[in-house]
Each structure stands twice: as C-alpha cells, then as structure tokens.
Image (cartoon, rainbow, N blue to C red; front, side):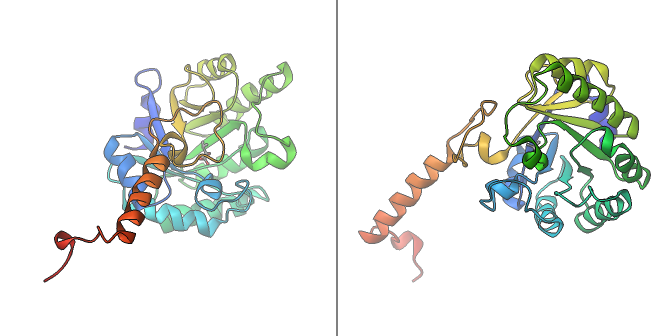
Length: 262
Ligand code: KIV
C-alpha cells in the first residue's frame, strides 16, 4: 500500500483504517487486510491510561511506531504528530515530522487542524512527507472544546469544517480524518474534496472508516462513544481466561505433564 493507491481508492473502494500501537496488534491488523494502520495518539488513553491525548510525547509516538512498523507487511502506516510537536512553528513541525519518518520508517504523519495549519502542512509535504489531516472533533484541542461532543452541528462550525477541508487539501494533505461530525456534513465535505475522507463517528458517506483497535475489539471499556461498534469482546474473554488459569494454578491442574520437561 502507498499514498497514491489510497488517493486512487476515492469513490472506487472504501478505505479501512484501524489504530495499532505495538508489533502484535499491528500484525493482527495487517494480516486482516486493513488498508491503513494509524499509530494514533489515542495510545495516551488505551495504552497509558491517561485522560486525554495531550500528555503523549514525540518520543513515545516514535517508540510505538517502531513496534508497529516491525509488524506490518502491507498496510500504509500513518503516525500521529502529538500535541505541541507541530503547533508552535512550522520549522519545528517539519523537523519533528522528519524525525518520525526517519526513525520509524513509517509512511506518513497525521496532524489536527484546519486553515491555521495550512502553512505547516505545506511545509511538511514540501519536505517529502505525506500528511493526513484531521478535522471535526480534534482531541488535542479538548481544553478549548471542554468536551468530546460532536462538532459541526451549528451552521458556523459546519462551514468552518467545510472551509478547513478545502484549505488543507490545497495545502497538500492526501486524506482527511473527519471525527464526530454530522453525517450530512461529512457527505458534503467528501463531495467537496478530491482526496479521500476517513470517518470516525461521521456516518456512512465518507470514503473510509477508522476505529480504535481497543474499542472495536472490546478491549477498552472505560467508556464507549456512540460511534464505536464492538466486533469482539476480548477483554471479557481475557478476564475469563486469566480467571481459569489462576484457578488451575491454585488447584494444581496447571501445569500438567504436557507442559513439563522430563
Ligand atoms: O489517535 C487516534 O486514534 C485518532 C483516530 C481516532 C482517528 O486520531
């Protein structure tokens, strides 16, 4: 998989994207045939147990992205630029995007924001690094929004998201994540840009979908956003398995001769 192939999928074939944060989860996602694996800064919540993505550092993103890279043969790997790795100025943003790509050998970076980041996006793309955009609910701005509620529900905010999509397309993004926006707005954005849109909580009309690995497999159950569909209940299965193991250890039913050396 590569960036031009993802762009060419628009209007032809829906794009599937999932997050992964380590070798094993990346191998599973890749073997299942997803088109894109996102090393999301959502790792702050599902891997580190933090309340938001804000504390995640550049070095932590690089650490996780290296493990993901080791497990992937086919999918395109996109790495989130964490909070404050690109916001201060575009020169620093180019250097940090370069550090991610050079040290991890992943394919592209993702950053949140619209018109105000057009110069930054253009500078990173000009350095030869593909950029995925992210509009709508942008979790790194949680302290401005004050909640993880859907965005773009009023006319003013909907217009800004639509305008931002055009600005960041012009700046050079190869695709745009639309998070938690009304499905009709996602449809309008999707029809207004030439690059693929990838929705999470954005309805069926986007060019692709993304879900967080731990959410869709039922590994993370601290909370469940409306847009999450659980395709498995692995936490429940894991708790059951470990309970059985503990019981068997205590009752001396494990290990048996089958698991022992002579
Ligand atoms: O960090 C992440 O997992 C994301 C997805 C929710 C798109 O940005």
